[in-house]
Length: 143
Ligand SMILES: [Zn+2]
Image (cartoon, rainbow, N blue to C red; front, side, top):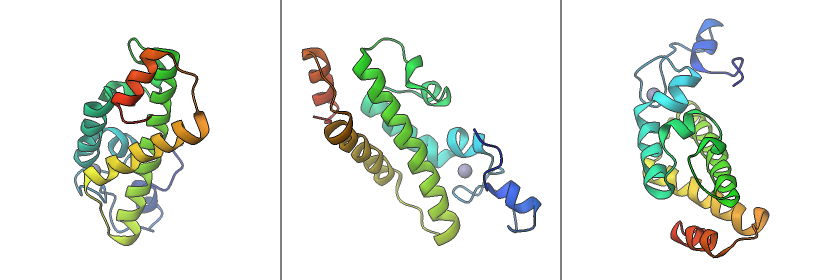
């Protein structure tokens, strides 16, 4: 992950931010590690993702859906879509909290992630599926 992004510790160092704490939980220093994997708010989002599709914290931490245990090619590709949507939404929520002092409920953030994945599966990815993949995608409400 790019360490030159404008996290609060980096902004704090150059005098642009008054403190370096996470703008979401106001707990620890807002490192990328904290923001994407340790923040309690984000942990709640990860919990909702896990309940939905079975991706767990370590899958997300490894930053690739390919590490997931078993699963078809389609499932692994859907997991990559989930991870992409996750990173996008975490960063978007962090920016919304920093710039607009707005923090959505974690259930809403989860819905945005799921909606993004569903959109990609239906309109962009359009996987060729066998009956098992189809059942799995229906179970996840992605088809
Ligand atoms: Zn935090």
